[in-house]
Amino acid sequence: MNTKTIKKRKRIALVDDNMTSLAIGRNMLKELYEVYPVQSGGQLLEKMEMMRPDLILLDIEMPDMNGYETLRRLKERYDLLSTPVIFLTAKTDMRSEIEGLGLGAVDYIVKPFSAPLLMKRIETHMLVAEQGKQLKCYNGNLQEEVRLKTERVFSLQNAMLVTVSEMIESRDSVTGGHIERTQNFMRLLIEDLIANDVYTELIREWDLDLVLLSAPLHDTGKISISDALLNKPGKLTRDEFKIMQKHVEYGVRILEKVERSTCESSLLKYAKTIAGTHHEKWDGSGYPNGLKGKEIPLEGRLMAVADVYDALISIRPYKEALSFGDARRIMLEGKGSHFDPALIDSFTRVERLFIKVAQEYDWASSYDCERLAS
Image 1 (cartoon, rainbow, N blue to C red):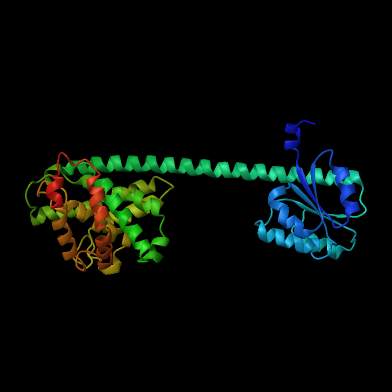
Image 2 (image 1 turned 60 degrees about the vertical axis):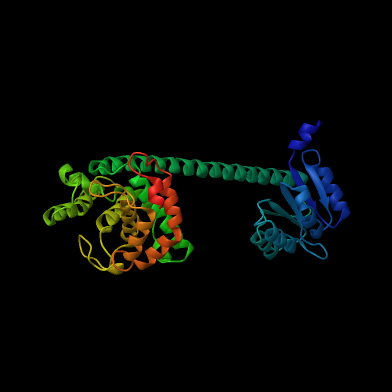
């Protein structure tokens, strides 16, 4: 028999304190399997890593450590032990058999046994174990495939949402990158809150992927605002500002309309919350509903910080971009009035990362990074 054939043969650990039984068992099995005779449960535990058996034939009545105790220790050491174990014993009472099977043995064969019966039992349990391994491998590959496909779907959804949202933002001369920046600002804030155990009970209830995926839709309602108003170079009149405020209401309506046309509403639920509340203020002076403090959903409070910060450091039709330092000062002044104090504390911890995100995008057409940094 060549080396290649031997290598492919299944391995059996034969455990018995009786040397005669070991010899008989080895001679019975050696034509089909690689057989490792072992004289005690202790030796089996010591040699498991070396042998790596595909099946264990385990005698019950052995000194020092019987078969039951040996199996218990195997289960503890090898994480429930996927290797099938067949008990071999002279005991014929049902209680002993139930105990052995209850410990996790796959079979219980009473001595004396016929060679053909033992070989058939071994063959059956080897086949079942092999099919189990193949199924586990298949399930693992399937789960990985599902994970990769899910990631691709999320990536595609995010790209589409960002593209549509950027098209909406471009109508009021907001330069490219606003959507990605605010989305990343929210991610940094959420990661910091989790790391510092702030609002973690609320955040645990979210699907974080969907929260971040929905963030680009926060200003969807601007599609219903006229270009003339969006791009007005000066300060808005009171009446014009009231019209501009309507973009929140319009956005929620648009998202509700989309929601009625799909069976998947989880993402839109977060999008409606963010779109409808990111202009509310901590002191109750915001719009559209004058919500105050924690009446404002956390998702909206987070977007308020991200959106205002990006607006401060960006060029808009009615203003120049502020420096990072000036933007920071205004954000801190809004603590407890415009913004949730806990979120401003978070902002100060991650401000350096905000600046890094801002500098990763191409601002050549609208930003002077050296001036902003001053």
